[in-house]
Image (cartoon, rainbow, N blue to C red; front, side):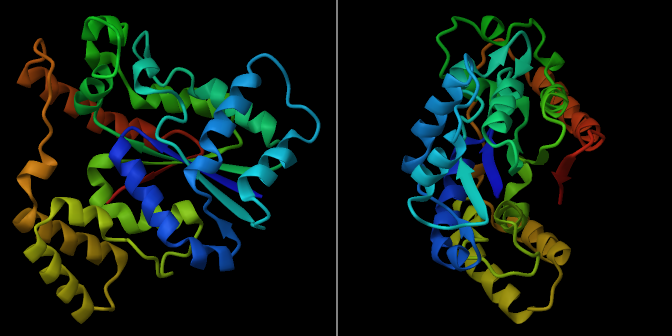
Length: 291
């Protein structure tokens, strides 16, 4: 069985993706793709993986877990989604490493599903905006104590992805920058579901509706309807042009609350983030979706 795990560093995006996938549940089911509701597996899977910290999976544990998740549904591909799959925000940093528990968690998942084809789909996010959002959920008194390093510019997504790759070299990893998600949403949905690039899917513009004015969405829909033969890349250029004109500033601007961080520091972190994506592309077995 193919098991696709969606997680990510942008929590509202994960919720939106889950809603889109569930909207396509009936159609997916006809193609052997199962999208169970999160209530069927999040707590169960977490408890199962926690138990694997101290023992190996019992005989038949995989089948018991799948039976509970699928609830008599048959499938060739199973999609599971949880923004906190690698850890809750309060525990997502240690000594300057993002998601330090990720390698062990993936090893546990592999031991539970030794013969299955596991794929990870993960939204990355600029540490300049991600770290303050995670720190808001932390009991630590200062940002420095939360990060475990004095210089946030040391933090790299590539370090985390290399650690996952080394821990489970046979697992496919697909990532993208959440800042690009409005342009990539249709591809993210299709790749998570294992669909062909041209296959129709409901909800491919859902993320745009959150950040674009109603007038802009109407004009975009009309434009796309009158230009049905555009390639995916052409669609992205059109969407980008409409966002330039119709984006809702209040929806795309993020409020940050780190008193000791200057604008220069955040600009430097953003530049490092962009450069780090070049390193991410060099990691074997990692597919970076880009506009």
